[in-house]
Image 1: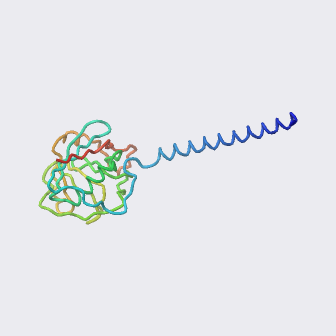
Image 2: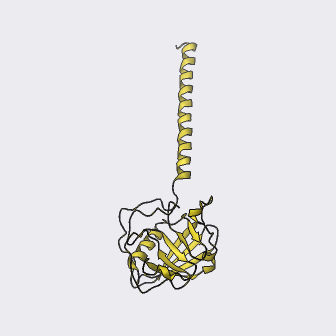
Image 3: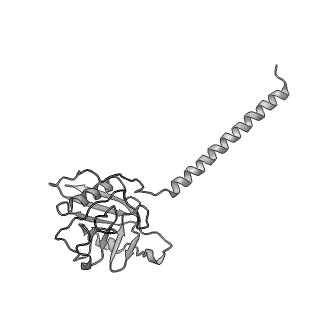
Length: 212
């Protein structure tokens, strides 16, 4: 029969082992929580190449954009004018890429820019697509176009004009027009990244693609 002293030592060893296991579980839980908290949301996924063509040229497409703070607006998409761009936008929206991204650059009288998963103006989906030229111009409010850092560097970032911006003509791919809810677009919180704001921009809750 084992001595009482031996049994106490075994129990102490088991207790110490259980404490170590519990400590490891707690540490892993804390690490996981911080990883979730600080990981990019709604658009963190990256892609190696532009998506294959999935839009149907015989159908019409629109995007219903819902803001996290409330309010919705609808973008009529132009697959006939910018098929590559619309295909990419539809793909990313259906993937949930834009969910949680913010309008990080919103300048009074100019435009609201969003679609960057990093919220810095330097993020994207991991691929780039070319500019698509057309007869469309920045002649009104609600024009939706791709942001870029030079020709043929389009990714996921897009902008919506607050009014005519004809000096932008020929430099950016126009792929849509806000047809409902322009008052919601006008209400997007102004944010100038160059002013080092201490707040994030209004976030997109979801983008729903309607195919008809």
